[in-house]
Amino acid sequence: MPALANKTYFNYGGQGPLPGPSLVAISAAFATIQELGPFSDNVWPYVNRTVSALRQRLAAWFGVDTARVAFTENVTSGCVLPLWGLPWQAGDELLVSDAEHYGVVAALEELARRHQLRITSLAVADLTGEAEATAAAVGQRLEAALTPHTRLVVLSHLLWNTGQTMPIAAVAAQLAGHPRHPWLLVDGAQSLGSLPLAEAAAAADIYACTGHKWCCGPEGLGAVALSERLLEASSPTLIGWRSLEHDGAGAGGYHRDARRFEVATSCTPLFAGLNQSLALLEAEGDAEARLAAIRQRSGQLWQGLRRIPGVRTLLAVPPPAGLVSFTMAAGSGEPLDPAVIVKQLGNRGTWLRTLESPRCVRACTHLVSTADEVERLLAQLVEG
Ligand SMILES: Cc1ncc(COP(=O)(O)O)c(C=O)c1O
Image (cartoon, rainbow, N blue to C red; front, side, top):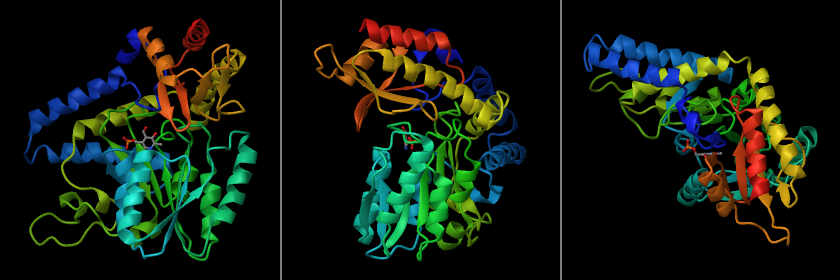
């Protein structure tokens, strides 16, 4: 990974570095398209093969049929485009967790404003303990928060702020027992490439992901897995030639499958790059083995942080994945500004990020993180 040659990197949840072979695959795809086309009968079979190969690979990761996978540009559009196509009625309630990304929340607020929907809140950000207790609490709180008007539940699989995992398949089962069977929208920004997700992705109605974070693919390409019932009930929203079943004037009908949410021309070389990045991840072991490796480093970091006076980790237990969020206080007990900590570390070539809610510092460990890098970060935090 060329990006890792000159820095100590802990921002995998923001953007993963692109491996050298993925960069080569992207350049090679650009070259092939120029050689065969760029717009010629000779190029389309290559473009179709490249897109289909990635759709098949992602469908296997999601544990769903290829017909349920649509390509998007990023996580947010995967969350938002299908939502606008659903048949909302004034008074419907959207139950949104208090740990969702502000971009998705903003889109939900606008959806609610235009259709006279009501947004209610599901508290999960304070669930910082063991997985079993967390899952039980989510189940109880969901039961208490659901009303006869609830039409949608929004919950991330891996919370981007605390680093806690949510029991998505259990939530989906619980919603199936509700008289209105609310839609389940899952923001998978932090899960694709870090967690085993087939069970969750297959159970959700909308499971939106991106290739540019934990998959270490290029920015600009994401995917969403959609349930069959959502595909039946929803209409396309941003419509273009790729939403249509047939080419040409008067072509009419939309794809019945998830492609109804695809729009128009996108950058084929990115598909080649993401496919290569996913193949590299697969070569490191299955999803469980990869998560175990990620957790080894996040656990090392979490333990080390807890030994530093004044540091408070958001999670009370070793992280279930690779996100480790924390705050720091000076010897006097005065809180240290996360932005200052991040800037000082950046000056030394170590890259973390701040989060606003709750205000803290977040470090991510991935498969490529080394024990030495974690120790270097811990030493730098102690030195101040
Ligand atoms: C949980 C979550 N949702 C959404 C986003 C936005 O991602 P994108 O720019 O791919 O839409 C992020 C990015 O940090 C995120 O962490």
